[in-house]
Image (cartoon, rainbow, N blue to C red):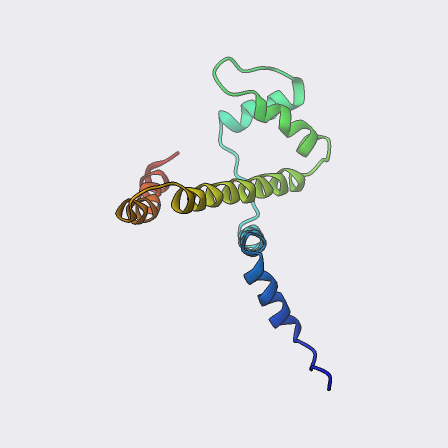
Length: 138
């Protein structure tokens, strides 16, 4: 007697349960893709954006701003002639940062000898700590 074939969605769910980091990566990439589809217009702010673009075009190093972003802007956007590679690189880097944050939280909550009340407080305080940065950040 042969076993019936496993539906592909069940197989994918089983793979995600076995590899939670893969599931998290796929979920983060899906969220970033949806976010890019919903809001794909780059915003330019006078001062910062102007300095970064001028650094990318001429190599000028501004005395009062970071210059590294301008040097990254040149190969990603200026040489390509499009903002799409820059936006894709920013999205990919945000997925990497989210994965590093998730790893740090999981490591802190599972491997370090904190008391249970502290683990609960740390896990619940993190989103609350982000609210002022989201609301009042620049």
